[in-house]
Image 1 (cartoon, rainbow, N blue to C red):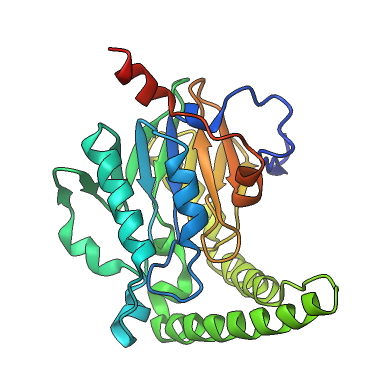
Image 2 (image 1 turned 135 degrees about the vertical axis):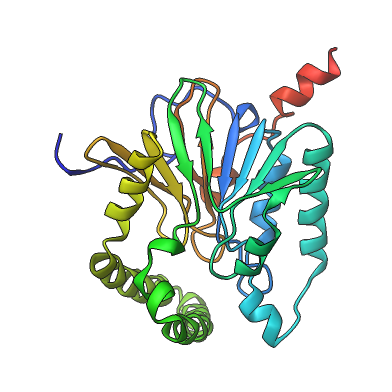
Length: 280
């Protein structure tokens, strides 16, 4: 096996997929960025309404405090999202929250609450016995740890790029042309430079080894992927700004990337664990 063998998998090309979304055992979500005007809550709500997992991991940057502190933005869709998570929690879903650099204030509230546990990191054991370290990942970003001012500038610049991106692509679609992912491409290029300088992937894999885990789940860089790095499986959940992606663990322990485009093609089904409870 090569040191960085790419094994990215999505639900549209995983021919071995035999489970319905309603069968999901665990759901990993990150980088929702509530408070940003580009946050896409509706497709996330569709996802949460189609599954009733045993566990949900919120892998950081769920709330964008940087935007909220500048201008409070809270929409009715946000209320519906919180209500859905509350419903899942009171119905038995275990919810774990590991804060990121945009909701870092929550790291001062590290504790086990009634419906959610907040920690800097978690260890998740899959159905097949695999152990996964779960954390946002900003702890291993050199810009976040040593040049926080640059991180703030980059965040606001990214939002400006998103606005430009939306405007340009709206015009292109008006003339029947294909959209151009300007903001996504530039962000991935910038993050790639930072990753190489920081050794982001390697540090996360080293952290997983230290925790005696076979894999690591993170967010932060907004690039959804599942990649094998030596003996460690690296999983990034993506975001709910541009990719609208998440990682699902199925009842057999298999891990898979899904996104909102795949979700639109699936048939809604009553969640498995909800059906089991209804029959008891």
